[in-house]
Image (tube, rainbow, N blue to C red; front, side, top):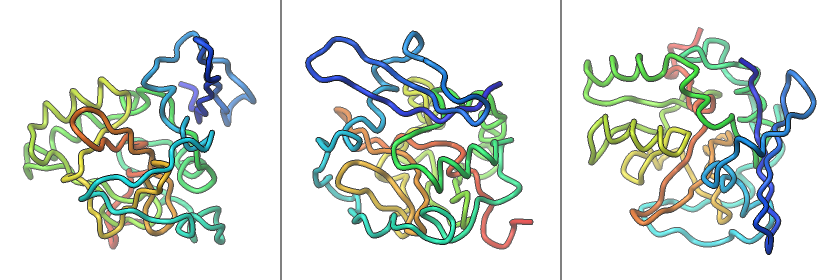
Length: 217
């Protein structure tokens, strides 16, 4: 299956919404016929400069300096070589380190073995841990305050793994004023797209598919 980085574009004042996929396989794929309102929202506001705000706690805010250019894009190191769940390393490195607005395509995580392996981890430990694909630091743990089935159902509904405030490890995660969610190491993770229940962190699986520090080969 072709792996793509999706950049969403919206034209205000028009009912027309378009999405373009910038793929490492081919230069451009036009995806508007498959795009949904949910997928188009991810990255729209920060691209157009309309999204700056301060999110309510326990969300921890960060500033643009976190994502300054470093030796490997916005990070000091590339993604690990043995990412979990069969995640695509090339896509992971592009989205995590050389990208601020794009995302893995909607539903990408269903093309991996994440659902099966996450269920096994949950049944064994009562939770699933997610680690920075660059550094191996833990960034998320789910489910918290809900069932595993509810976590998976919400992720399926939105198209990306979706976390709530209590499932974020705030020691190493920050939310920028435009909603971009990042690690302190400079890894782009996704975006905070709040809904009626509060903050919802819509995260690229390839960005949190790392192995814990000390277990990376």
